Length: 265
Image 1 (spheres, rainbow, N blue to C red):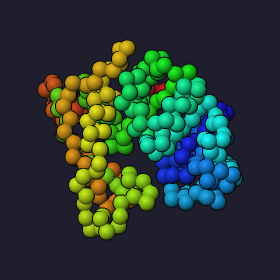
Image 2: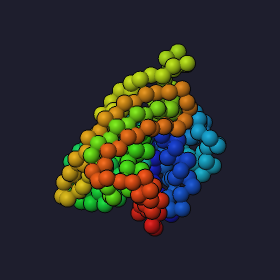
Image 3: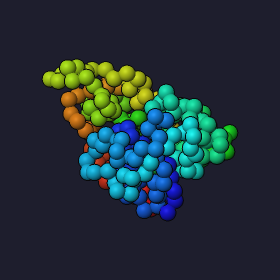
Image 4: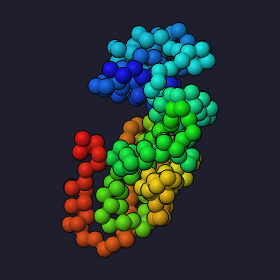
């Protein structure tokens, strides 16, 4: 087993890291990090667990550590808020750590890939160009992740000229405590700060090419994002104009036959 650390382990994203990694066949969570004021407390005694199922037993009794006084493992999964993540992830990666980050802080840097394994695993080549002893790899915004996977087979077979996407995003995407109840009850909030910009930039980077530098996709992206009164699960309505003419049967076939690298492995 490979020992790993989780940063920001008490937040919603951190809890999801803990939940998934606790079941992983290769990784073992050996240390978890939170704020300095919580240092030394057992995870089960301080985390407000909100995910389905209980706290994984393998992690429940681990003491919380702090980045001010403790050193994480070589491999780090970061669920830190973006305003904290930038400096912390930069320091760790320059000191030789391999940082896999959920934060947006480094997504738009020249040689930091935004990776969706089914779509662009070849973009990991970019880490060779990072001027760090370690590296940083990011994942995309949640709405972008759900968008680019079905777009990948369309892009490969028919090319894409324009994408128009309307999102209906669950409350969980706002983190905890999230959206004020009086703002969302019996309501739809037709704007999520920076969400539309993230979809536009990230989808073009992910579906673009890397050849010593990132070459964004040439297609246009129009996005409109909404917060809806659903706890979990985002929905997207997507219109795609392809470069080539395509029949309905060809379109369906592109989905049925598509296999990303994880499926091939």
